[in-house]
Image (cartoon, rainbow, N blue to C red; front, side, top):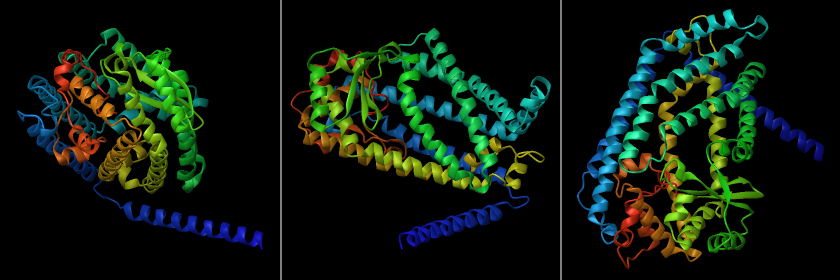
Length: 477
């Protein structure tokens, strides 16, 4: 009887799988229509998204022109600090207008001038001329194409990257990098892309080539393995290339954090301080690791600018995410998202009309199919981004509530206010802009949920801190 039940379950699973495959193949045939205007459609998606995000930015810019802080912050933030915050927000918004226009021009230029087919043809010539015959093939061709394309886009984006770091952030006191360090980081990043990109991209292509129409299932399994591998290897092999991790010294902070971890049965293995101050005044605290062995990392700037109890309060919020299974839920959602992306990719991978719209008439490279598929999926990605931000903000309120239940309401509120002041962070936001862009609630919303009642003006008592910016990694706390 047990065997029959197992066979029945397997039979149902196979029927369900076959039905799903049939649906995907039928959808693929429906979308692969000769002379279908894929290029115009994708350009329309791109321009539409650009205009929509520009409209949101204009709404937010009006908020950044306000002269008075939100009521809940009036007793916390001096007019001087608020004016600086608004000026910083407007400067970032203006830069955003220019950089997004520049990026849109790049994208449309690549499409209009058929950069993808021309670059694919050029790298194919390099492949036949300079690579031994036994190593030629789509995988090697794709690797050459990918790294050439990446080099081009990296060079094109150098001006905006330089301006953001050494002009905008420098003007408001956040940048701590030298040009040498900026270049060194860029070189290290490119080297890591080669080290990890070659095997990962090769495996991606090989799976698609060898596993037939059901490749998306194997790609998903491969993606899960890669994510777990990166979680394991990142703090060991990658993070030390850019920052130094040092064990947190004995003292009240270490005692407080270890006590918090013990109280919550958090599997704390190590407590580290990271030298974030060598690059910027931005600050954060986070944890990482496998389920049974976690590590907590605190930025040196956060320790320098906060009281011990405030740092512990920030970590109580972060550990609230762990205790409430937010990280597990988000990981599960990301797996579902990755699976449906690969499943939808199987619909487009052999779509000749899509390839031909972008100048690929004889060859249909997998990597090109994935790039074009990603562009075609832009409207759905916009909806997913909106929904994920809504969920993320809900989780942030829950983590704040968790910290309150642990007795850190006042300390967390003070820490958030202090970071806001030291950051010169945006103190108010247009509701539509925030819904689309923000993964965290704005400070007035969080203070309201915390039931904060002021007993002194933080910006007065911490005036010196306001002159030494400390940024929470764009609202990471």
